[in-house]
Structure formats: structure tokens, C-alpha cells
Figure 1 (cartoon, rainbow, N blue to C red):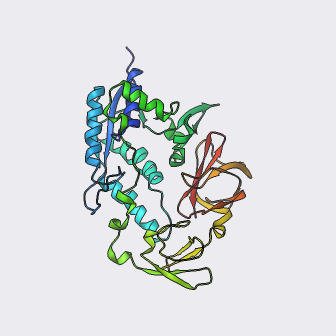
Figure 2: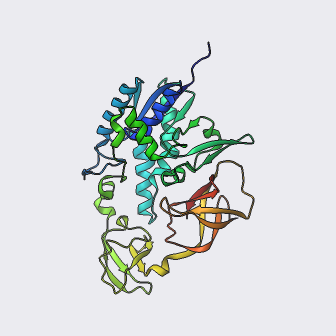
Figure 3: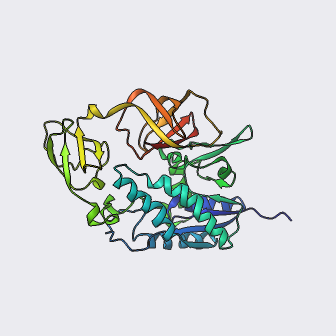
Length: 358
């Protein structure tokens, strides 16, 4: 008798991971749920009614995941990842903001925690499995012996931007069951199965209200000057952690036209603002390049490049730069290219890889 293939599913307590687990069980796989317990309660994060990635509502998420797994009759392992998340995600998040860059915690969490430390820890706990699956909207396709990460059928829910640091080796043990479904399909399936997660809202903030101040000490949040491009003082900022390149709201500066954050100067604790037209640029340098389907790019590489999750990927040429860096030159200027965010490279639906905008 053949051994049944065992798949561990990353359970979040939401509808997507619930349906991913249900679909895999329906196909005859042996399924076990893994829940990452990441919130240690050490930070004074106030709930604001919106579902968050990191906050006190994680207790509700655990209860929801437990309910789903009972409903599907599959075991659930709640794995303590508090230390790893605090060090690898919260630590990274703090360091980036204090350096005047804008972090992307989802990219780092997927890379270091969800597809990294979580699986290692589960294995060390004796939880054996053949594949790891999540509720991400993405696809894995084999092409001439290579495994490719590809955009999903539902492009409105495309989450490949957050997954570009996966490697070809990792793809050999990963499944994305929702890649061929739309979000409506997924909610319909959840409803047909009687899952309580059918109408649950999605996480909307990293932490409650997107107020990152609880992650920093008072000594790290120092007010300073807001200046124009000539250095003239226009007002005062509340601390550089509250600002990102391209930001318009919350500047507290009165002007005849809207002003946007152009530059964050950590040395002088100063923020430079300018009009929208000054935020456009045709070039960026990306470092820490990860390529998924091949060992190297053929330069110059023609691709579409996405510079943040809500950005419409734009046509560009990619050139080698130095060490593990590349230079990206867009056909048309792009708005608010932001250090710390990721530049992800696409050819059609294929994700080539990407790097961090430096």
C-alpha cells in the first residue's frame, strides 16, 4: 500500500488557508495544520477594530484555526514563533525605519519565518510532512525541468510580490492550492463547506492602526525639521519613523499645492518635501538579488518591474551593477521609488526574482 502524501498547511485562521487545507484534504492528502504563534504581548499595541497581522487579535486567529481544523477533522499544531518573529521581523522593521528606509515585513516574514524557521521548527518537533502549502494566491509551474513561480489566475489577489525570495529548491516542497481560483471562488467554497471563516475580513495592517510607535523607544522618536529642496524650514515632523518616501498625508505643512516626502535624512533628523513631479525617477539600484528559475539573468534583461505591492509593474531594462546588485532603467519615470521596498521582476506571468531597492 502506497504511503499517503502528507502536507502541512500554514493556517492563519482566515478563509484562504482554510480553503487551501480543505481542497488538499478533498484530494486525498493527509493534512496537518501549522499555526505560527507570533505575538508575545510585550508591546503596548492598542486594538482599533481592524484585523492585523501582529497584535492581540492573534488569540482570535488561533481560535479560528482550531475551529477550522476541527471542522475539517485535521490536527493543528500551534508553534511558538514569538522569539523568531521578534528578532527577524520586528528587529528588521525597527532597523529599517531608523535607517530612513521603508521596510516590507511580509517579504521578510515569508522568507525567514513562514517558509524558513517555521518548517525547521516543525520538523524538530517531529511533525513530518512531504510538502508545505499556504493560502497565498500564486502558482508553481514546471517548465523544461525547472519549477517557476507564477502569478495566479486572480491577478487582483496576486501575492507573488511577497514571495520573490523563494528559491527553486524551496518550490520543490511547496504548494499553492489557490493559484487557480479567484477570491470569490474561495469564499464560495468556504460557504459550501460551512466554514466560519467564509466572511472573515483580511488583515489590513501590520499592527493596529499602522501606528508603529510602540515598536520604538521614546529616545528613538525625535521630532525634527521638515524642509524644502533648498533647505528652508517649513515645519516640524514627529519622528522619522512616521514617514515614508511619497507620503502626502499627515505632514502638517501648509502649502499652495500638496507636498510629498522626497527624502528622509537620518543623520540630520530631517525630512525633505517637494511637489509630486519631483518624485518621479527612471532608475533604481536593487541589492540582495534572488533569482528563482535560473542562476543568472541574461543582460540586458527586458522585464516588467514592480516597486511596491500596489504598483502597476512597468516596462524596464535590467543591467548588472556591482556585487549582487542590478540597475533598473524604466521606459517611463515611476512615482516614489522607495528605498527599503522590493523591486520584483516579471516576464509575463513568470516571477524572475527581485531585490531590495537601495
